Length: 397
Ligand SMILES: NC(=O)c1ccc[n+]([C@@H]2O[C@H](COP(=O)([O-])OP(=O)(O)OC[C@H]3O[C@@H](n4cnc5c(N)ncnc54)[C@H](O)[C@@H]3O)[C@@H](O)[C@H]2O)c1
Image (cartoon, rainbow, N blue to C red; front, side, top):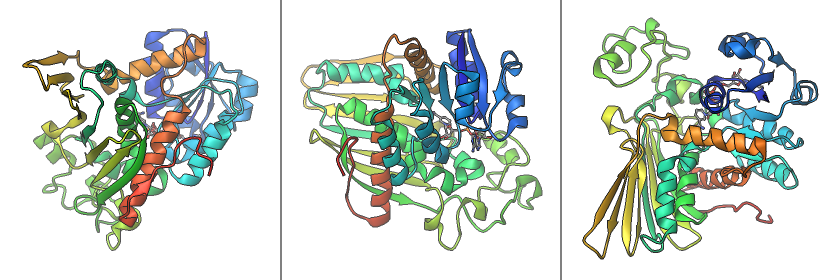
């Protein structure tokens, strides 16, 4: 039996436990939870956990009384660091949601907490461990394209309205979409390129699509414009533009999603881009766009070396390898349909392996920190208009 202690039992961590871990290993039980919203959490729990799961006021009580074999942190972004710092005190495997921190103070404190910790972390980076990313990395490691010299990565998010209509629109919780979203991409890009990101220049655009003057707290069912608004559930359903069809969806054009007079102060960005320099001397570009819909979805990269070009897109689930100096082009097609392109299942196998002590994490705390440092540099660059050096994990000051 694997006994899990969960801090922040929300939608994502329930999915990881119930739809991922439990499908690999049926002997999984949630034995302790720290979550102030006990009532809604109890409703979310799987039947098999309802009897055993005890709610605790803090992590210390959970660890001492429930005696879990491992901890999982699934709170919203701003609480990942403080809880992970607490978890670092225990010699228990930890599954930690991303981003691992949302500002420099948090990131430095987190790095410090793990300097002498024996806590083994699986950071929730499904893209890095997804089979398609691993396959691409294998091509690069086999020297198929020579040294990777350039990367061009894109993320056209066709469900991006969640960042204006759910809890993610609270900038104080997310810290913006470099940290919320690009943390995955900058992580896998650095992994594929086999080199850390050392300098970033970035730009972002806010307030051109979402956010606006609609009153705080407005929901679609109370809005006079629900017949004509492109974002009302009925119009989204009609156009196939996504959304859950709930009539009480919060308004994406409300002041809650960004201050109309000065959106730069507190709003998520409509889109953002970063120019990346790697320690190897290679460089690349990454862009993320949050207002795209439907078939505009794209997430993947083109990586080039002197001998060839690799390109892949998770939505197409396909890798293409073009040899530059021979008349051959190969395509490898992956099976489709898995959560986070198969990456969640891989994270599940990794976490179970760490619990059993059979192999180390492929996404240890250092990967989460390295990505946060790159994202923080991007956010700072977008604010200042300057190139920003990226702090490296383990750097002395
Ligand atoms: N790795 C991925 O691909 C991926 C995918 C989706 C979400 N996420 C991340 O997962 C995190 C959670 O997202 P979600 O959609 O599950 O959110 P959620 O709101 O459903 O879950 C958050 C949970 O934290 C609880 N909580 C609130 N305050 C708390 C406190 N002080 N102490 C303990 N628990 C507290 C809430 O009651 C809730 O149950 C986010 O940071 C998000 O970025 C990651």
